[in-house]
Every structure is written in structure tokens, then in C-alpha cells.
Length: 159
Image (cartoon, rainbow, N blue to C red):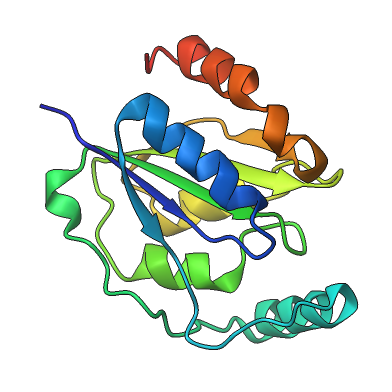
């Protein structure tokens, strides 16, 4: 039987809302990708923190131990678009496990930048995984995104 893990990084809570919806619809297990250090709640400050981490190719330590991925066939990974890609804790997560032969379903929340280059970064990090075209959801629309998620899952024959 196929099992799904919904892993997500959420700074403002938007990606968490979408992750919970994916987990509910797909009957998946939730896993929060959470950095050991706390990001600022001030928008301009966190933007600069994210830029510094990206430029340094940082791999922040994570709070939670990674789940055993052997039992999962499908991994949904969600995150806000930070500087055109995933936040660096997502890179830590993806480089800490073997995603070979898994199906990866990316989604991101954004305010106009869509998926950015995160799908290409996912392909580079998980080259032996099947990576679906991602679902981009505006942060301002997350509370009303249920139908968009359902349509995406149906279009990709996941439900």
C-alpha cells in the first residue's frame, strides 16, 4: 500500500495550511521541516536572513529527526518561495535522506513569484526521483485553496 509523507517548511503559517490540506486529502503523515534557529517575524529581516543563507548555501540544522522514508512512496514537499527557491532548511531535509524512486509533489506559497526555480533545484537534489510539476498558491489565497488542491491532485491522477 502506498504511503504519503507531507513535509513542509512554514514561516508565516501559509505553507502549513496547504500542507494540512494535502495530508487530509491524501491521508498522509505530516512532518514539519523546522530549523533549530528561529527566523525573524519581521518581514524585511527574514528576507535578509533568507538571502544570506541562500548566498552562503547554508544548510541549517533541523529540530525534528527525519522520518524513515522507506515506508513512503510519495513525498509532498511544501514551502514558501524565498528568493526564487525553497528555504534552505528544505535543502537540509532533501540532502539528509534518499529520495530515489520516490514521487515528489512540490508546492509553494508565494506572493507573485510562483514556483521560481525550486522545481529545478528539486530535480538537481533528487535526480532519481519522479518530480511532478509543482502547485503554486498565493499566500493571500491559502484559506480558499481547497478546490485548487483538489483540481491539481485530480489532474495528476493522485486521487
